[in-house]
Amino acid sequence: MAVADLVKTFTFYEILIGMKATITVFIQRIILRNRKAVTLQYPHEKRDLPGTYRGMIALLKYDDGTEKCVGCDLCEAACPSRVITVISAEVEGEPMKRYAKEYYMDMTRCLFCGLCVDACPVDALAMTKEYAWARYNKRDLRLDKPQLLALGDRNFPEREKKLEFQHPNVAYFNIGHKSLPSKAS
Amino acid sequence: MDMLVFAGASVVKIAVVMVTVLLTVAVLTLAERKVLSWMQDRMGPMEVGPYGILQPIADGIKLFFKEDIIPSGANWVLFSLAPIISLIPAFIGFAVVPYGPNIEYDLYGVTIKPFIITDINIGILYILAFTSIGAYGVILGGWASNNKYSLLGGLRAAAQVISYELNVGLAIIGVIILSGSLSMVTIAEKQAGGFWHWNVIGMGHGAWWWIPVTQVIGFVVYVISSVAETNRLPFDLPEADSELVAGWMTEYSGMRFAFFFMAEYANMILVSCIASVLFLGGYHAPYPGTLFPGILGYFEGIAWFTVKVYCFLFLFFWIRATLPRLRYDQLMRFGWKVMLPLALANIVITSIVVYFLR
Image (cartoon, rainbow over all chains, first blue to last red; front, side):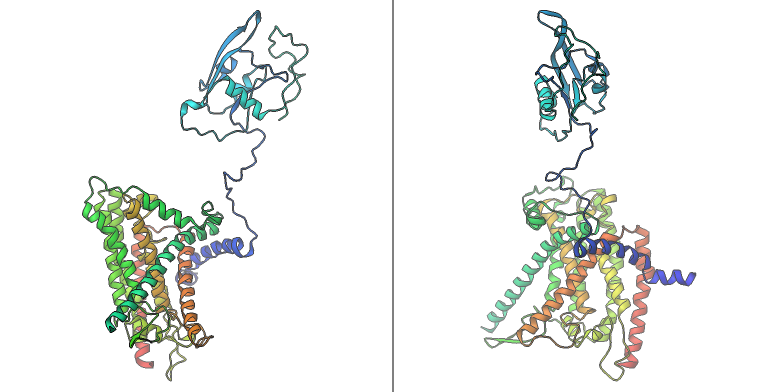
C-alpha cells in the first residue's frame, strides 16, 4: 500500500487524472464536437423563461380598452416595499365608480414578489416577462400609469373580456370571479 | 562595409524575432482564454470578430488608451521602472535561441547565420542571468506601489523565484554535462538524428550508445520550475487573484500593466523555447535528417521548433485549466524538499554515467 502511494506521488498520478479530465472535455469540444458549452451568448440568444416568471409589473385593460383598475388601493397596502402609489378618484358624474387617477410604481424598490398581483381584486395587475430594464437615470424607473398600461398592452395583447353583468356605474370586487375567462398566458 | 552588412542583417533578424514574439504574445492572450474556456465548458471571448479572434487587438487598444495611474504614495521612479525591468529581460533572452538549423550564408562577403541571432558560448547562462533580473521588476513593482497586497505579492515573488530558479539551474546541468557546452546552438546540434538522441531520452553515439542517459527527471523538474518561475498557475502565488487582488500588479493600469502582461507571456514563450532546445532537440525533427531538401528543409526545422514551443505553451494552459493554486508552505516545501534533491540526484547520476560510458 505504501509503495503504491509512493509510486502515485512520484508519477503525479492524481494530477494526471485531473489533466485527463480537462483534456477529455477539450477533445470532446474541439475534435469530437459532441459537447456544447453551457454558455448562453446573452444579448444574441435569450433563454426560455418559465411561465410563472416574475418580471416587470403591468396594468391591464379590458377588451373594450377601458382600464381594469378600480383604484381600490389594495395593491398599495399589500406591497411590502412601498413601491406602489395609487391616487384614487371618482369617475365624474358616477359617484359609485372609482378609478386610479394616478398610479405610480417605483421599480427601483420593487422586489418582484407578486403580492400586488395576488391582492388585486379585479386582476388589473400582471407580471410580464420583461427584465432588461437597466436605465441611466433612476428616475426613469418610477413608472406612471401610461407606462404601466403600455407594458400591459405590449405583453398581453389578448385582453380579458369585460363582464356583461358588470354595471358600468358600479365597481364589483371579485364578483363572478369563478366565471372569469382564463388569461391567455 | 562588412560591419554594416553584419549590423543590417542582425537588425533584420532581431526585428523579425521581436515582431514574431510580440505577435505570439498577442495570439497567446487569446489562445489562453480560448483553451481555458474549451476545457471548462465555456466559450471564451466571442464578441470581437468571428469567434472573438480580434480580441487581442481590442485589448491592446483598450490598454493603450486607459488612464495611467500612479498612486499618490508610490515611489514613482521605481513604479515606472518596474514594468520595464520586467519586460526587457523577457525579450532579451530570445537573442541566443536557435530557431532553425545552424547554417551559414554568405552575404556580400560576410558570413551570416540566418536562423540564429547570435551564438554566444554561454547562451544558457545568459538567459538564466537575465530572467533573474526580470524578478526584480516584480519585486520592485510590488514595493513601489505602496499597497499591502502589492508588497505581499512582491515578497512572495522574491521567495518563489529564488527557490525555483535554483531548480531551473540545476535541472539543466545534466543537459550541459551531456552536451559539453553552454551554447544553445551546440546543445541543439548535439541532439541531431532522431528523437532517441534528444536529451529527454539521451541515447549517445559511441560504443555505449544504447545506454540512454535520460534527462527525463531534469525535464520534469525544469518544466515544473519554469511554470513556477513564470508565476503561472498552480504557482501564481505572487498574483493570487483570490487572496491578493492582483498581487504586485494591483496598482498598475494602462500600458504599465500591459508591460507586465507582455512580460509574463514573453517569459512563457522563452521558457518553452529553452525547454524545447535543451530537452526536445530544438529544431530537429523526430526522424533523422529532413524530409525536404535544401531551403525547404531549413523551414521544416523551424516548423518543428514552432510545434514544440506551442506544445509547451499548450501544456501551460492545460495545467492552468486543471490545477488549483498551491498553499505557500506547500510551494516552498515542494521546491526545496522535492525538486532540489531530484535535480541534485539527476546531476550526480548523469555525471557518473557520462564519465564512465561516454
